[in-house]
Length: 290
Image 1 (cartoon, rainbow, N blue to C red):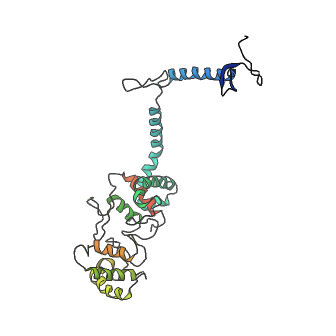
Image 2: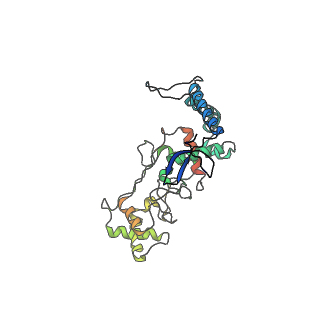
Image 3: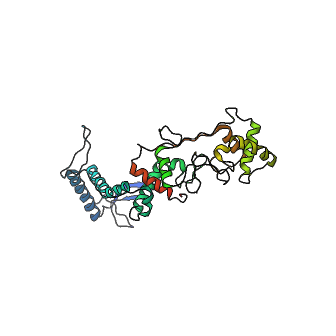
C-alpha cells in the first residue's frame, strides 16, 4: 500500500503513468452499471447468434439459427401479400375502357401512383422527372401533341413508339432537305425565316417572303398551308411558338437540313398491358391531355 500514490485533487489512486511531468493517469474503475450493461450485451449477442441467422459458412450459406428465421422469406411474404391486395385493382384496370378510367374515383389514386412510378423509371430519363421535356424530347405538360393528346392516342404512342422497330410504330419521316440536296443552304435559310414568321419570330422579313414559296412547295403537304400541322402524320404545328428542337434560326435551319427524325422506343412487351394503361392515364393527366 505504501507504493501507491493518491491524487491530491480527486483522492483517487494513480496508475503510475505520468505525461509531460504533471499529467497523471487515475486508476478509477468503470461504473458498475456500465459493466453490467456490457456483460448483458455479451449475453444478448450470444443468444441472438443462437436463435437467428448470423454467420456465413464455407458452403456459401449461413447459420440458420434456432428459430430458422429468414428475412428474405419474410420480404417475399410481404410482396406476395401486397400483390394480392393490388390484384383487384389490376383486374379492374384491365376490364375498364381506357377513356373511362379517369372517371373511376376509386381506381384513380392507384392508377396515378402506379403511373407516376412507371414514368419515373422508364420515361423520366428522356422527358424529365416533371415531364417538362427538353431539346428533342417533348414537354408532356402542355397541350401540344404531334400524334394527338387523347388517352387512346397517348396509349398508342406508348405501346408502339415513334419510328421504332415495332411493326405498328408511328411512322413519319421529315425529308432531309439539306443532306439530300433537295434545297440549297440559301433556300433552307429562307424557309426557316418563313417558319419563324408563322409565330412572329422572323428576323428577316424579305427572306421570309421568299421562304413562303419554298414552304408551299415542300412543306405544306404535311404541315398544312397555314402551318398548323397534322396529327394524323405527326407533323407539328409551326404557329404556336412551341419548339421541339429550339426556336433559334439556326435550330430551325438544322431541322430542315437534317429532318431530325427522333425515335421513341415502344413499350409493348417491356411493360404489361395494365401498366401501359396506367402510364397513358398518368401522362394524359399531366395537364396537356385532351
